[in-house]
Length: 319
Image (cartoon, rainbow, N blue to C red; front, side, top):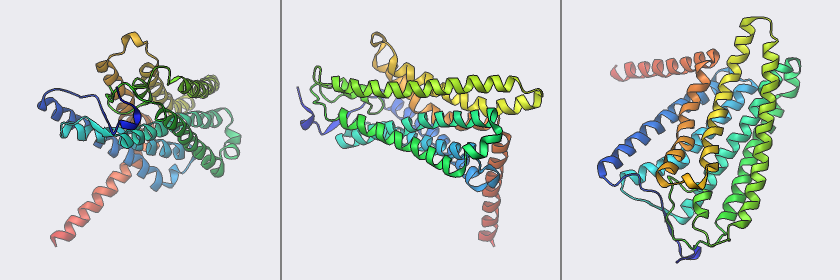
């Protein structure tokens, strides 16, 4: 038996017992991580550089891509390092920082998805008031509220989780440090005060979920009343990517955290953690750019600019 004051490090879940599989995991994570960095980086650069995309919808998308980059950078590099160096260890403070940052970025993403649904609601249901309700100052304030809400949520949960005495060793049966796995190491009944915070978080999340659902009910009713097929297609093309990203976020996170304890075992938890922490940041840019012609054109311009300047640089070097 040990307590939290004597724990200096935690042991994350091992990926595999053989060196070959560990290296395979390293290259898999590296490929996904680089793909996420490239895709989100292109979206951020395209939105920042193309003045045609300086609108509320793309401003929120830029923030969302930043959060995706930060989220995947919180978990994947450590998993890659552990696979490469055949290690499971993460320092106590490192575990606390990882838990805080992951909660911060994922909570902020969920709040931002709620704001993005409001943006689509105003754009389609109240187009004449779009400039008034979503001016530049209002957009900055809403984005700041999403980041601030995520920070506050992460701070409260991290401070409370790591103030609980830990008496069940230091084996964290997960890809990264997260609240449910740390609570499994707590002393009997010591985690009850965390239940209060979880209840508040659930209430806030439920309110956001209801707001998104109600917004999209109103959006779809408005879209179906649009007389032209082209108008309906354009409206759907701006809404469906956001709805797909929200569904991916909700389904993976909900099943991971609300699944029955009877079907909880390390290999399933590892797969679920991979699905909701690694896959979405890599897939979200593809979802958003698939049906968005404006964004695709802006990304093509960025890529062309990069290759064009590289060609000029190469010619200069050869000369």
